Length: 139
Image 1 (cartoon, rainbow, N blue to C red):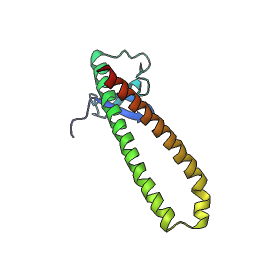
Image 2 (tube, one colour):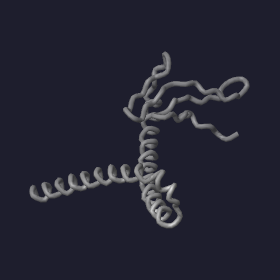
Image 3 (spheres, rainbow, N blue to C red):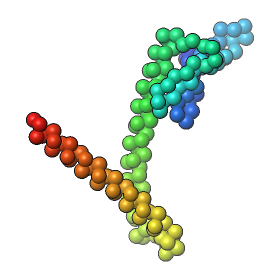
Image 4 (spheres, rainbow, N blue to C red):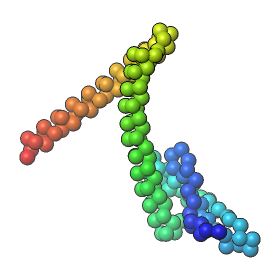
């Protein structure tokens, strides 16, 4: 059997449950003892029950949280790139294959979503331009 990691993180919606993995028993069975719950949204780490987290456990959890947040950030930007692709595919579909009934079903929701997105993007771009021009004036 290959060496198992000392800790296992069971992914949850906003973090993970953290387990210490052990095979140090008579039957060499894998035992997983929950030691903490981690919330990646707010950074909270709550020890499980009466368990007191060691410095090593805190370090392992902090490293996992850093890696997990990087994975989630990569997924977010990948999702946005996919959304651009979907918008292009949707445009092609609406122009070439959509029936009148299909368009009637989605047009209002698409227009509202695109208007909302456009408003946010324009406002954010204007904020960046204003911040950049203030930064250039201060130089």
